[in-house]
Image (cartoon, rainbow, N blue to C red; front, side, top):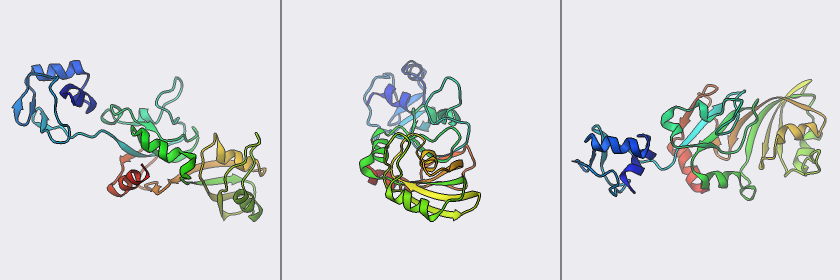
Amino acid sequence: MRLDKLLANMGFGSRKDVKALVKGKRVTVDTKVVSDSGMQVDPEKSNVQVDGQKVVYKPFIYLMMNKPPGVVSATEDNHDRTVVDLLRPEYQHYKPFPVGRLDKDTEGLLLLTNDGKLAHQLLSPKKDVEKTYYAKILGIVTNKDVEAFLNGIQLEDGYVCKPARLNILTSNDQSEIEVAISEGKFHQVKRMFEAVDKRVLYLKRLSMGELELDNTLKLGAYRELNPEELTYCQMIK
């Protein structure tokens, strides 16, 4: 890999900025001051330093966010703040994107990454990766609804959802439930409950496959995946 590409990818500015760093004799490769920003380096083996600080090469970034309401699951938007806008610049330069979408008013687990292969595997209908949600529902959720979800809810457009596991936590005028689905149609959980004459008042994603929301993350906070979570991601790929 070219040195200027490596440093640009790691957040040291554009290739023009990197060229200025090299010209200022601020970059070393294997302890030697370099003069050619286009030289080839091994990002895994070469000891590249800028101002004496070692550059650690990371081709991909994996972030778990507790998405807050009012923020859209997109990389850019003309009207609203996006989940990417919440990230610090050292993460934004990796150009991460949200894996799947949570509605603007929905909270909870959201994975952001620049690993397109992982995103495809997590979202592929063929992989049947379960997404679990907690919800508050206007209306009394019953065992009849549990059975209907398990048999496959038919949405208003005629689409029949895959079987979903509905667990009733409380059943009253405002019921509390957990539901696990293995697909991600537009507004799917909300539409499934509308199909049984109920309405979602509050929705929060708790898990995606084996990735579970870190309950220590406040709304809008995020962190890099830990080694166990990264192992799961590599297994999925």
